[in-house]
Length: 590
Image (cartoon, rainbow, N blue to C red; front, side, top):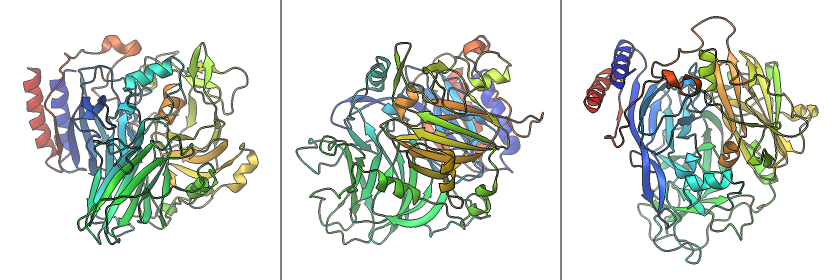
């Protein structure tokens, strides 16, 4: 379908359903390169509409989100929406198992609904190691006005992206992994795409641009923190300020104060922070590497500034201390266990979160997913789950199902680790629709890992050191394990989650550590309704890209780099705005 016909069809669809249904939010994004120097060295990053990090998608429960993406990179692009569940709609998930990547110079439009969700999430490019160059931005899903929030409305809302960073371009990092090398120690930690405040002249060079958060004394702000880095767990803290945890990845939590919190790769948290200090000077905001040699890794520390409007001077002196057990991970695991579900709070719906009693549901499938250090398979350095290193086929899995293509993948992923030599494969998990699955992540590597599941929020019911056994179930949290989509797994330890398979589609389970993911540490869960019905999954989008075995059916676009960029959010006037966008596109393609 031509771009003009597609936008006309979309306009007619939204005009029919948008005025009386849920609101629409429209975004027009140009994803391209930008030259910046966050650590004092010029390098190429991925920006959205020239912004690094990208713009915030700010919507409310049940809104429909329409994002037209122009790929202005010189390589294919996919955007995934970390934590957004895409109910009945894995077509929009933005990973290689469901969607063909957007070719360079082409545009493609995502359309999805944030159905029955609230909370703090983020998007990022999911292919080609591009997240190491940026391309990420925040997603805020607000409660509907009719649903009570379990805390007073804050005076402001602040999003912070923290993550380890290399001064090498993502293409160079990719080549290192392809050649069998380890990435080594990062060059620093960025906060909102900026380097550290010069808290120490011998560690931080002059001329580094740093982030400043301006606040008013006595006010309370909601801080949404996302670890968008490559592989480093970070301890986050704000000098002399308590952080009251209230939400993580779409779940309201039991509210408790922390002076610091470990935030692992791919995780999102939100805190309430009250500006209750005397503002004798500015205050440090710190994100420092965890479970490493502090002396060697001292440069891998992000530092921003919290600036009161009545501040009497610049921040100075040493940074606030990290947890004292720098190598002992027991403190960190106990801290992780303390993050619990707020059973009495409503979330996207008025009924309390705790009305879903997961402990009373019988488990129908159980998978132990074991990871370990990288291995060599066919001369290449790879990462595995259960001895299998996943290799994405040229044809996305969901497209293969749609067009009844054979041999693209196999439905025989093992419930327990394979014996024998590790291997490459395209084996996926055959999930039972409306079943209840237990997944145990066993990390036999020496490095921290975190794992994410698309399409769902799972209940984190247990974690401990050593090998998981059947007896480990006796230690599970059977009441208030928090529901989230990304969980940490400590080295030499396991983490168990439970998930209700009520969302039809093919869903990615992956290491959020970018190097492990790139080297094959992922699998997919296929959830199919055995009944013939169109009520549990949306049809394939009219604009679905075709690739692999289906490439011959794809209508070509003329590459059209560097279009005008804009961002528009609308309510009931959405169809009118889209019609205006249609006129712009007719002009562009004429």
